[in-house]
Length: 580
Image 1 (cartoon, rainbow, N blue to C red):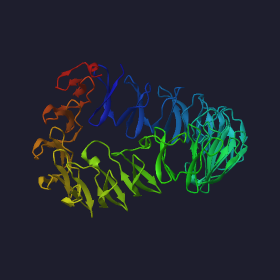
Image 2: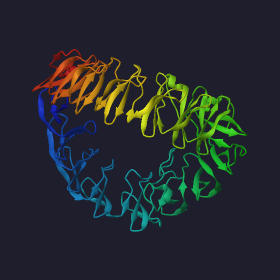
Image 3: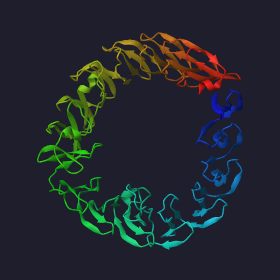
Image 4: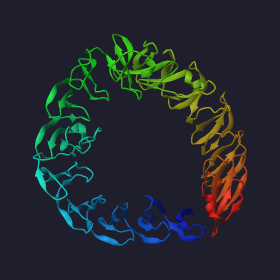
């Protein structure tokens, strides 16, 4: 059985299967990267290794340690230089590099020397000399092993043997397309051996770059003049965009649908793509022929079921991915609130019903969607001109947008709102039941009480605004089902009941949430204990460590140099395997 990691007094150590400490708790952090790898342990901003049997492999001395690759080597850094160590912690490759990547399955790693990139093997021999200003990641290659590199202002393709072919494109980025891929990343370009390249701008800043296509022999298939080039996937066409207009290219790189579309979408699994021209939408097939006339005023995104909402001649309809109309309109609803759904047209939100009638014209900046079965589902919160209000399920505005903030949750007919930097509570007619006088507040709880903030202190009010507990706490949490709540006094925590009486005095340094067994782990002056959800001490805070309870009902503990397992009743036994 492998050693176990434990924490005591803020430090990490290790114990064996019998609970004997094999490494005293002295590390600032400890974690396991991958199963089978050693533990990474941290001390004074340095990293070392501990085997899974609990043996020190390397004392913390490196700035960072990577994962161990299939060849048994891991990259490590020390004093801003990189090298490699083996699983025994011995330096296998000296710290000669400015940066270093993990070795791949072929035993090659990309390294940087004096700002230039090359490839080494596991013997630290340069397979490709470090003379490139850019070298694509080893994962970014086509089926023949070609990668994109740059030397000076010239780009070329290179394989793992160092054979190079010049492209003639300068300052570009891309990676080759693997034939047969059906999903697209930077590599989705038509044929095996083709690459999309994005010239100029920052890496990842697609909107500032010019896109083109090259082949692995360095030939320019499509000049880098487009604002964007999309994916072919399994389809014969791919969308392109330039100067705000879209079109489509074929797998030979020819522009077969002119750049005159307002929207040029990707092809869906049924072989259709949504396009927009002169304010109207339609679908085209894989040959670029429209599947119908430009007849839709609006088409939403398709939902997970493969349906979308479409506006046609003033009426809403449901369409599927084959451009067929009709059927239950709710199939296209992404959200449903008492039979109505949101629409988003022209940058504004509105509502339609199940029959496709517009019951709220698109005019809102946002509609906040509620979930659940409580009474706050009766209303939807809206935002317009940075003010919030509420509408009902008929699309009628019941509380006009006039609040700076508001809660979308109504409890016992009340919701909090913010107006002129103060918080109060309104009823479902928008009238203030409790005037805005607080610096912060929470929703009312099912017990009819709510926490409010006055200055930097928290107190408890009832539904008419009377204080049950005056503002006196530095922090608070909602009441549990047992009628108790955690509160903070200074830097300590305690448990109170609903009239503010302390069940456990504020002596606790930190606490965990109550677990399924009704117990919460707490710490007082560096010692651990257990508290029940009735506010009773199950274990006094006199343990050096208590772990989480497992599914079998046991948790690890340490008291002095003794380890064991403990159940939810506080009974202990020494066999650590019981805790597994």
